[in-house]
Length: 483
View 1 (tube, helix red, strand yellow):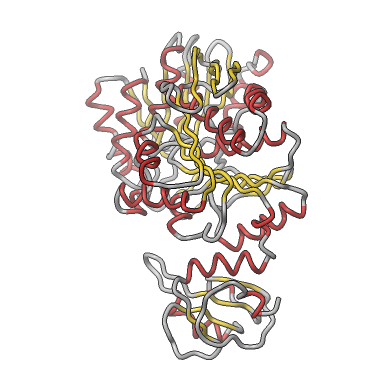
View 2: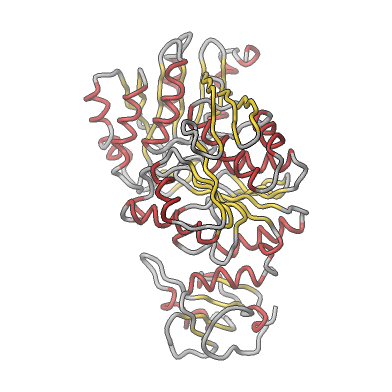
């Protein structure tokens, strides 16, 4: 691509050299001849320190936020915003020809995006999905590195989706991605807000900064779909002006879409989705009241996209659920579920939705992530002892943090509760102990790993797939044929 074509529509100062572009990058290690290197700044780095190195590696142009006096240099106001725009330009701006949907919030993003994609497919459309578990280009799955990819990868994926015939792209919008301007310049037909609870404060520093990052999405949204039951959803409605706003609620009839006659069970939820001019019964295969919110969010978003309401709601009933999101791995004399819950609020939502239906004990196995916000660890313990009859405290992804130190941040909560618990730092061993104690009527919830099939320990990623571990144990116990 010609360098001047790459910068079409981008504000800059300086003179662009005559050059053909092979790559746009903000990582100096990826620079090759013909690359454009964009200097961006983060919490612990400044790309300007590597601009000269990038030119020496063959960059045809460096984009800076301040004059460095280098050849082939142009200046812009914001490197991150410019990087996002240049990436889209390089791939021919596929986002301009696609209908984009973004879902943000602390919990529910993966479920809601997956449901919206399934509804679109039921309505006869091809759609792409970008999220935590993986990326889907129509029916093809691609591994995901980040919940929301960097701008280059995002533009490349959208180009592939357009080429595959997709007309819609549904994506999770993480707070880090929004803060880092990865989505800058994109325009979303629909933006969904699920909820906001404590998470990622290690990155954002304060809850207000966290909320501000989520809120920033809606400056790029045509229609916002908001959870009226969440206090930050109500605040968002007051603070953001968009062309159209749609609300949903599991309790408040003032919302545009509400749930009535809700029936909860260990295998899912049933309710009537009520909107202006229609009412339809939903049978949704994921338990917990939060599943009502997720289903309402997806249904309301699909309707906002122009999907006929009865088609949207019918698709919710036919959904196959989401891997690692309150997923039933076994249901027989006892029940085993897994969920990605890794915050106090997420664990509380899962366990509170299951506790009333456990005929025996509700057993929760959980751990806390290392090198992440340590303040949420006791909150996770509080949620477990509030609902579980027995707790098993183990490791999640300790990363380079000492797993025993992580456990020390949580165990006092379990001890003070007076409820029975055990500690097993090695997660595979903890799973074995959990299985050995199962009795008829018990419900075992494996919290934290969800869709993940690995553990990050001391800088090393090891294989650990709880789906497979459960399946192997069930096979050994000759229980699979009874499943």
